[in-house]
Image (cartoon, rainbow over all chains, first blue to last red; front, side, top):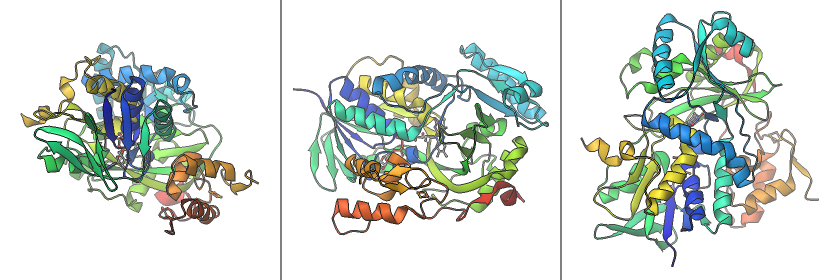
Length: 384
Length: 84
Ligand SMILES: Cc1cc2nc3c(=O)[nH]c(=O)nc-3n(C[C@H](O)[C@H](O)[C@H](O)COP(=O)(O)OP(=O)(O)OC[C@H]3O[C@@H](n4cnc5c(N)ncnc54)[C@H](O)[C@@H]3O)c2cc1C
Ligand code: FES
């Protein structure tokens, strides 16, 4: 008899877990309260950026994940709009230069050979960048992908390998027996399994709470502007240094300086639209767009790329990043309880980290030794 | 017949919309995320009502599927005008 696993949540993380589990022979049921990619994974950007990751366990995971992405289109037999576009972090002030210099040094120590380049070289690599730009980083191996395509392709591949997918079917309750989770109760039925993996992004805490398990994930809203289709304009993925400093900023500290946490993250999609982000705000589960934030994002975009002042914006949207206080996802078993696993809290890194999260979670759930020491990502780290 | 264009901005055909429903899409945004219908310059003003009708007839449970929430800006605007 094969091993039965239920995955709750069909975003990038849940679909990837379902795929790798099905691939290793488990009998998988993937459940989403609405639809594949109906949560954060359907309202995000497309960067697989390595050089933006905090050196340490997250960067190590991201490097492994980026390697998996290189062969994913072939493996899933789907065009995922994957492209090794290279990436830049643009630097506008001397203070930023200092912060980024330190980060680059740490990245290089971790084996990522990011370079600092002059403003002139940056403008040569990416025409249209402002004359005021001081410097930039450059790494040729940063990449991009269409997160919708990844989510749907992972789900379809899992289905081809025998997984059952139930959409429009919210998990209401985790069923337990003594200290063991034995299945889930959805709006329609009770489903039993040997293991349940909760990959419900920002909604993960609600599912674990009735078990007395506190999962410290909170939504951090991000807003993005979408332009009309344009001829190819952006060659690489671009972040501003302030994007990095906002991302690494903890909780509400220093929020007063810029309550919207605006930092530029810009790229161009396959279809020609520019995705211009972004903001970082703690506003609960609110997904309303805010015209003031739109304006602030517009300002940083036009400052970096003056020619963007002429571009038409056709819509704006927001998504909720699953934030944790130490900027690392929660991946693994729940201490003191059997049959239950969590894979959530990827904040702004879920696109980049999806493949490796799925692969390692499948190893853990199937009782194999994970290919990387995962203690840094345990839920129990928050208890100290 | 199945190759009738439903979304002119993005060039999406009826057959693609039907495939999306077949794949499990249960809402207008679900179809949009699978095949880009409604993502174009008019932001679905033209195609969304048609997509909703198709979805309604396919799901056939009498409930009107939600249209996507209108997102700002309601009409395309020049970025320079937002900033100013
Ligand atoms: C504006 C923005 C830009 C971003 N840009 C990038 C980027 O460029 N690169 C990058 O790497 N990352 C980026 N991210 C981060 C990335 O989008 C997230 O980390 C990732 O999408 C999280 O995926 P997830 O599967 O954990 O969550 P989700 O996609 O939210 O999936 C969770 C799923 O669980 C379902 N669910 C919830 N409750 C239940 C229940 N009770 N029962 C069943 N199902 C349930 C939901 O319907 C949802 O589909 C960005 C995020 C935002 C907001
Ligand atoms: S006709 Fe579909 S977006 Fe315009």
